[in-house]
Image (cartoon, rainbow, N blue to C red):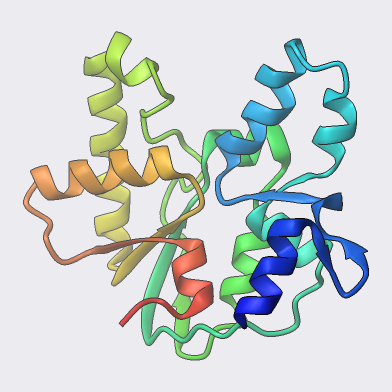
Length: 186
């Protein structure tokens, strides 16, 4: 993106439109923060929440993206985050976008909708349960035989990748869906 275009975005204008009319967050729990947590203290939370989108939902349902710049040769499985799935209805959106990627084969893992055990402070308060959930998720990833795990939530990404590595899996790539879509994966 040219420097002048970036400056216009920072100023809040591009091509005569208010680019701050919508807000996009790269992970489900970020939108949840805007909708739920800030909703308790902000008078205009409803208006802000209506302008705040999870990344893949925004690209599919607002932008209506026809193609993506990314290319990935290999098999990918996708983990649905609790916040994205249950609080925002994000399920098909990332899969719709990943299906547009040349060379990518999407293979659903068993229990792709099951919690990975992170849940913010849940993983600290209930460490044993959290570890078991993460181990189960890692086993489902392994059973899928995918080259990479894609996710849309940074907490889940941190938790699952950390657990995969502690279990000795140094080969399964763990990627945010935005990395894949943008083509930022070598």
